[in-house]
Image (cartoon, rainbow, N blue to C red; front, side):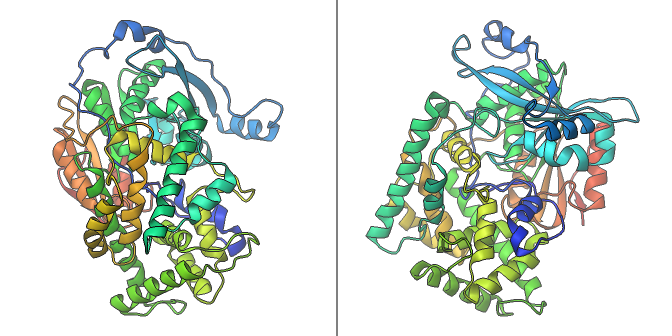
Length: 531
């Protein structure tokens, strides 16, 4: 689970799906981000197979107004007004065979607006894995990123291979995803466990059959190597980069591969590449428990709070509500779909990514506890990027595909999950069980993991700023501390607050510190803390 939230006005129930997308920016999958990429020797010169990769590094790309000609005239007009341009960059499907098939990466660019001299290209990644950087740029960052940064940098979004507009991973169709999202992920007996295992296996088989060879080549290491080709195509000597959540792992992997090509790099809401998948899931369970407690403490002071004021009682009330849904899903205004326990859990978790969603979560829980699951189902739909027409984006498919390649599975079978349940339930009495069972999804993946957890030092890179939020639910603060310590040139910036990630979310201290670094190259002093 990983995304870059922001603070819009909260919508009415009828507009909740679009509103949550605005709050959360890019809602991500219910599987946690995992580490990936085998440790590679720092490269001071060109990448391996450099002569064979020369056609990719030297390719010419044609920039055009974003949007399809004729069919989307209004969209083209908006893109032209905003100065947005799009292009396709070719990269090798398999870096061990660069003379083979290609992958077409979708790239969008918003030129620097001035005043002031242009500093270069600043690549943005909003997280995931599976979040579209192109959509993030064209739908948000191009207009709402800090003005001083937009003035001096060309902002660039690159959809990683298998993501968004870059030959996306495909798995289930809309009805299949509806069933998958509703599947019970807290099995009570052997039959429930078998049904969950069939659901995960069916998802994996659909990905294999619909995606083909690409499914084995969507690792973070490959995506990082792709970024270096994009850097060269843009004409930049170094990579200036801001990555959020999973985007921090992508950025750190780039720094490991090409430390002397790193420019100014911000890793916000950092992941810890040294942790295995089981520990990442366990830490994230604890992170969401911390976020729920913060929500509950705030809720206790609100007239519309549907939970008891005391923490243990609030946990008990929510657990009882979810258990009742397991027995009898709630009706919704959808007409054909009910609210299941799994979807309610997803909707609650989605709202915990940012405190801006807390009022809507209070309302949704109150309605659901009164028998109407409509709003909570809409929250789950927004998190999964389900449109009102029943179509899902490729977010969930890409998220799972990248995670399963990046590290060995957290669990190899149901027995291993059951053995770990006490630890997960201790970490989060409400969410631990669901997050433990969800981590089983990579056990039957069609392609074995190509990455292993390891420390990333990126020796030789200039200062890299790592940002951690103390009550971040999706990327716990300890991960940021760890990554900053691993990186030889890491500088930790701490934000004392709630929510996932910190840059451009309302903290003047954070925004000023990071914008100054991006504009001048001056990193924060060691262990700077913002409130």
